[in-house]
Amino acid sequence: MCNVCDAVCNVSCFFTYRRYKLNMMRFDGGLKDQLTLMKTKYPHIKAVIMGTRSTDPHGANMKPFHPTDNGWPELMRINPILNFTYNNVWELLRGLSLPYCSLYDKGYTSLGSIENTHLNPALRYTDANGVVHYKPAYELALGQDNQSLERAGRDKFIPPSTEEKK
Image (tube, rainbow, N blue to C red):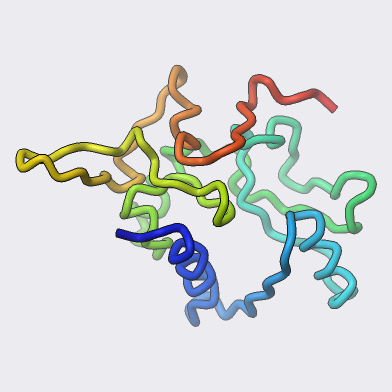
């Protein structure tokens, strides 16, 4: 079974995959700290591509091209999947046979840090022999009434409906 430390290593390995020709930059700390360090080290970077969706915490007021907030390093956040639903993401990835992080096949639906990422209990099942397994993330069908199940494997989740308006 994949543990959380393996989860972080798996994500890092996935994003350095040669297909994307990305140079993985890793900084310690929260997102704001990471972007600040990146901007200090690489001041020529003007924009970052984000995977934010409107249903994500703090995503409700985002726009497809959204500058960082006051007090953050000056960058343009590009949000290409802002209006995608959880199900739309999986339709795109699986429909086009795009590669994705293998942790999603092991029962993770939302990847964060080592401290707050867990298998999603909504995907847990027990087979006829009493052995516990987890379905892949794409089998989590979300509707209007159960959007929060996507992050059921994350600690400290802030539901979008309780998010403070800025």
